[in-house]
Image (cartoon, rainbow, N blue to C red; front, top):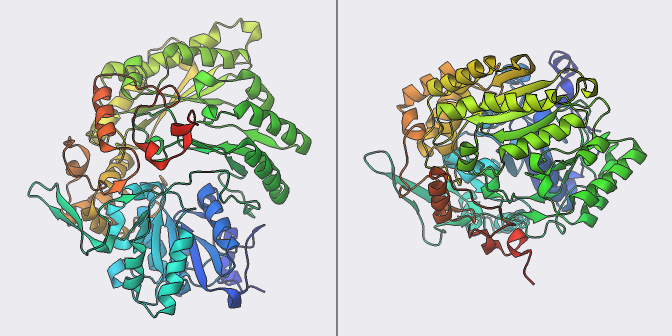
Length: 621
């Protein structure tokens, strides 16, 4: 029987003790005597967020299929438990065995967003693992980073032993084989890291060094030893229907952010929106077969007892077998009395018939993402949506009985003018007009259109990676312009407006495009108490600004500077399959307002065909 790491009096004194006790349905327990390698998987945020992440479910299932490997989990302790662990000197522990994380062979941290960076240091600190990789001894876990943020790992490089770049299903088995071999031979930690550097997709920061020019830009980025690769290509799964996927997903004992079975139908996106990092780094588009998805849906619903199933992809409407899949799921869920969620549907592919079948009788709100208020800006960002398509889709939804619509936009994108900003309110007004054109007796109550704007952050491996960001003041000026413009609209009472915090966006921008010189800032911010920065109630911009000041790091250098397309970027050593030349051409086309067709309409030569599968080869024999 497991012994909990926390005493009853501690569990009774903290919020949500279920976050820390494990014991979930389908949790994996193994006999330690049969185990050679212990791997702790970490999501550096609170349990409710981490348990909602599909990637960890997939890797957890994969690792635990291997007989001599036991994969366990750890999440960031909420501030109340954080304080108690420090006061009582209790080391951070894994949920399954309740044993200290420091005792494991590996600590794998998935890095999904920049605002969790201080939480990574919290995990290391509470575990008793030195924050700096070069200070770790032979007895401490190998710390691995993965996830979308490792497409620019440099701000975190000093804290990690290695990074896994790409999709996790392909190289971990080979890595663990190297670990067994190195241990059997009496090899050192460094010996293992050097052997890992030869694996595809693996980046070992300690084996590379950066030199800088007088103006602060990068002069060179080179391996420090012979035989270490100059460039690291991401790893992908070519056939998504013959790979790992959980038959028995973990089921939490408390409510989490997304408490449902998740069915990943494809990876990648054909659309090529120029602001979207995911749309570039996950190329090429690869679909899971219909038979695979049907089988997984049944197995996961049977083994979990979940009351909802959701489709997961960047653009679900582009899945080629969507009608057949949805038809099957409607029949299956109706029999089980289970709900279906269909996120990521494009407004131009809106299917009123399908939505009527899967939506609740109450007609909950629909979400559309025009991203920009004018057609000119939608062409700049390559959104591929016309105003006619937006209005038609909204009109069809209103006639189908919906009266609540959420609209998502971004402020601060390249070439944006005040006219484009004001266009957000004008578009919302025109959508409201679509509702009020319906005869009053046929309307479903009052129309409510919620407009939300986020602030644009240029991300690595996008055509906008060279673009300057707006300042916080400029972001807020544009948000107020949207707010004032909405107040002038005829149907302003039907329109609501929300915008994100500008200070958080500025920090995200630095962390997204920073280099190794940002690492001391992250550490200093953590030492000042910065934690859970993605949570509004915990984010402390003043502490972050002091950390930048004390480390002598200029935010403007990373954010508001126009970068030359010839400049060496911190992430240039990574090959994501999309060529730098393609991204340059897309940036030029953006500035000229030229639209690029989607991947199924026309191959645009991005470079992702090098992986030999997916949409690039759909029409080839």
